[in-house]
Image (cartoon, rainbow, N blue to C red; front, top):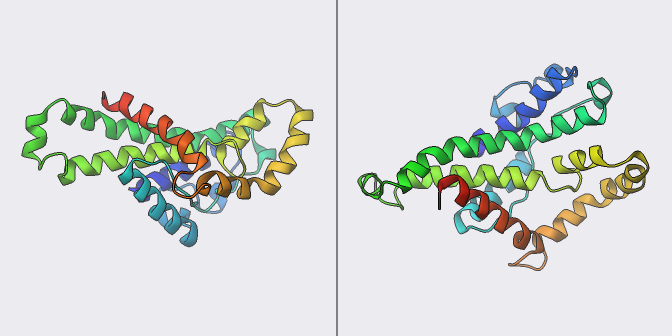
Length: 211
């Protein structure tokens, strides 16, 4: 499932940048849906382990990364607005995938007899759709956290006035990684990040599948 969610996410960054005038990602061979082009061995393994575990348990805790998509903001049309569009393209692509998976899942939930014919709620068809939707929602919400190096930070900076951005951005870019670690893993077993993200994930999931 991550071999669908991650490549589509990074490809969407590359495609948005290309459409806005920056061909850097294309030059680096990243304007593709090939998972190999976007896979980071360490970040991808961590992401798979933590996101699959969190999706199965219902807790929104995940940590990892794909290979960053190279973008030159100086080439983008629209300045900071263009940078924000490129950043938002990845999470929005995961929302589209989640909606695509939620439609058949919603149909199954409304037809219990059909679910039983396919092996029940623990059967492979239902579980595949369930995890596909949750993992893509996790990828979307996680990447929209407004802390560098996540996509949400670039969207946030685009809405700041220049003076505030110059004051805040250097600090967040220097310490953002450590702030994320603290949010996602402290306190152990019931992190601050999980308390915030889980209700958001569950709310969107329930809305999409009609629960």
